[in-house]
Length: 351
Image 1: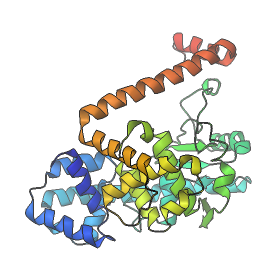
Image 2: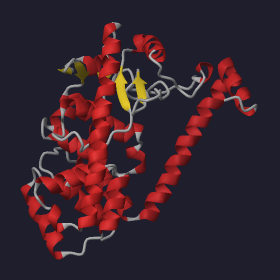
Image 3: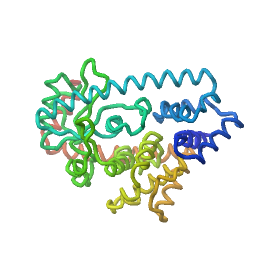
């Protein structure tokens, strides 16, 4: 199995509970092929779907077809992730209560929102990094102060927080399991005023006093996060965790209907949905098919199959991104005092 074949195999495994055709395909592989389990573990771990892989294989009673030591390892990682997610929910609940008491309604995003609504049906399935939530930009300063008073801190000095970002620098609290990211923006480009707090608060849903986006907005945010924030549109990359989130959301709402109103990004979103559909061979992932989308999907799988091409494209994207960032900083350095102060402190190693 090469890299792309292993991705396909993992993708099929992640659909076992609802794609009957993939169930028979995976069973055939498990019974008749010599699976490179070391590579499966390595790739599924890198893509943050290792517990999800375990849950799906367990759901259809395929674990007995795996090596016993691998199953034991899977169980161990799953239980660690399960316990961590319970702590994350408890931590998010504390934050939610604190902000609601001060008339701020946070909208929890991404993995945290999926835990809150139990999107996966198994609390140990989704791997979570940080607790992300969105607040109205007029409440950002107040939110940061409240959380600082609640013993959350960032490694950066306040005077050095000068670079434009989608969120305030990560904050941590001693004894808490996860870092938090306070977003006042969903995206950092010319569309930030379109994808704003109001859009995500409209139609938001309540779960145990938590606010999370509508399924439609979760689908849109998933596409935004992959194609813009993670630069998937430039890197032409596949990320199993992002695509698996999208797959789970697609079981609740039609993906094409969710993105139809975003005309200026329809091809970009459809490219991502289409590549995920091919990866999982899942009927629920519906997208608009046209020549542009087909061409972009072909590029994604071409780069995924050829590591050298992917690396060259990544080097190009990194160069362009880095050049744009440095150019913006240089311009601001010329007319913003706080930028000159920041770089002076950096030269003198006070940052």
